[in-house]
Length: 121
Image (tube, rainbow, N blue to C red):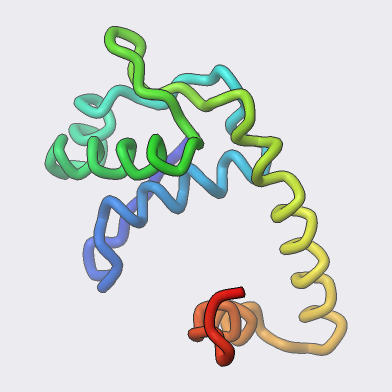
């Protein structure tokens, strides 16, 4: 699994890392039981602070996507793929519909990212 960051992005680095791990789970690139790189190794390879990686891993732990195990590092949980699989299918449907309508995915992302009009349901 190749993780990348964009230092020029306004999005915090830990959020960029967490988003990429989520995407890897949704796409099937990461499966239950698989280990993520150690925080130290990933920080070194990306030339960022180790605490930034740990922050991303803790966020993913809080979401139930990974377990943090002493001595084993971050491991994808068994139910992670189950939770994200239906969302992945829905996103693929949205992508197909956007292509059919000739809409750029950036427009779709903007629509998803805007606040809800009626508030949370």
